[in-house]
Image (cartoon, rainbow, N blue to C red; front, side):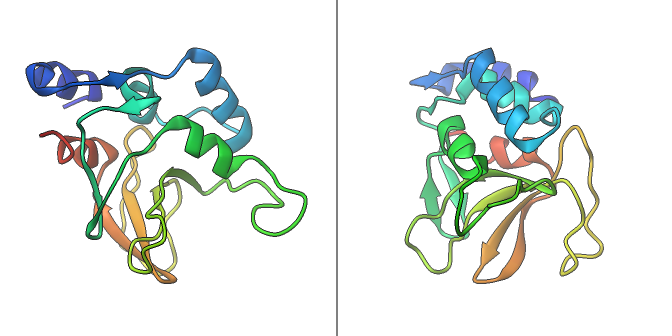
Length: 150
């Protein structure tokens, strides 16, 4: 099932979503250095600015992802974290101040601590971070989004 099919199937239950602009998507692609996975792009076009009543769970905390957060995360900084572009994963949401709910990423390469993870370049898995260890949140991005519907 594609992202568009997921949104169409659940259209009656969705409230308050707002899609990202093509310019925002182009900015994120520029920052990550390559086109976004197909299903992530489709999600951002439908709900990238505001996920409305979709509830994304990261370990145990509900997060509200936005393309603005992803752009901010991938924007290079002069000092400290991310001085060089992050290319093997795409930031999706932040677990905030919770020590058990680190950021959620779409994995573009197999992390060394999850060697059996399968990567579909159009619909990659979503991993979270439990302290410094990656944890599989969903086998595909579409599955992760499907679980967020009310």
